[in-house]
Image (cartoon, rainbow, N blue to C red; front, side, top):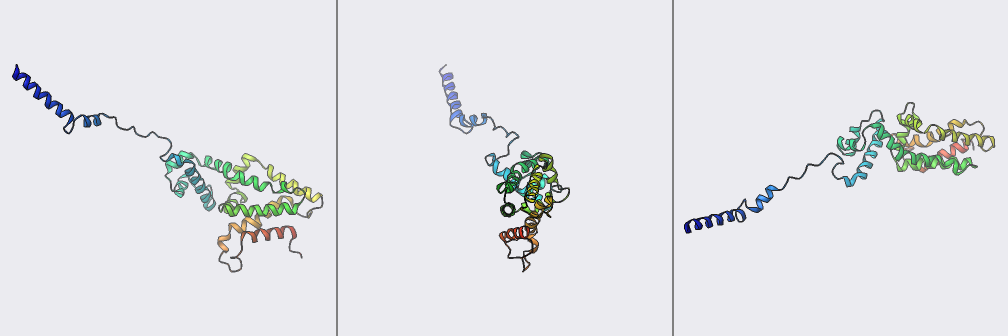
Length: 247
């Protein structure tokens, strides 16, 4: 009996030693027993705290590509690469190009459209001041947003531009009609030249301001024009529109 008790004591001591002191004891067994971390579920990409910044970079990249090669010829994958992201990141924020375009219209174009459209309302009784303000604002917007001039020329003024079609579908032509109504009233009041075609005045301002800025890369090395600034372009446009070429 004593021998058995001694043997049992030694066995218990050895078992206790195995559980606590030796490799593979309680600590290691507990580590093995812990569940593995769950795999990350699909959803917001890693670094989601930077979500607004990532989304803004995708919008900026889309505008740069749309201005450079047109909306129709730009894919979501190209936008992702331009922004330095994966296609999966792009598709997390924008599922289709139409969705991306609608977001751009709401968040980037509508504020600019409202600013440009308020020029005539700011000077309802002074056409020269109104047209001057419009030209200045166009040049100012183009200076802040380099994508604006080439994108406007490619997608708004040109026939069949996808941006123009999308804007018209969503907002109609109320702004255009409102601007024409101002010009017709100024003509009736004898404040501007009656020979002007009201529907071409806004297009003329665009042609004298945005077109030179959109094509500036082609004439920046021209000795006669390379020193021109945005203010010079605005001044020339206003002088030509309000005074013509007569002295």
